[in-house]
Length: 133
Image 1: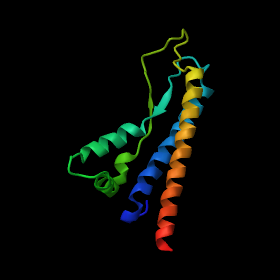
Image 2: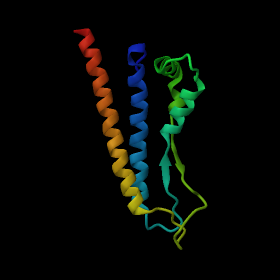
Image 3: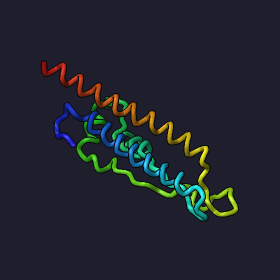
Image 4: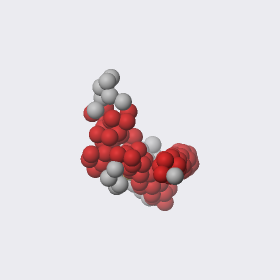
């Protein structure tokens, strides 16, 4: 984490990229265990944590930048981990609830999200670089 208000958005984008990377690992693990009996798929949900934290500072008089600044005071609130998705649900006889087709779609979508986050961070650094010139 970089402690300067100029990096507020970059810090949150960094947390989102970390969560996306963790989700990529979870999806890969799901695919690797798609034939393991009783395996339950794992997932990561960063978006809910961000929405929760943005909502915690919700006010019609606060800008998005003000909310981001408040979240940056304690970025640990955005730390997420893997969770077991639909523990009691399985459409297969062996108790496994991984759908390889769905996981591949999620993998592709997550890859695009990660690339977008990296592009956004790069753009933020370019803006800072242009200001420093």
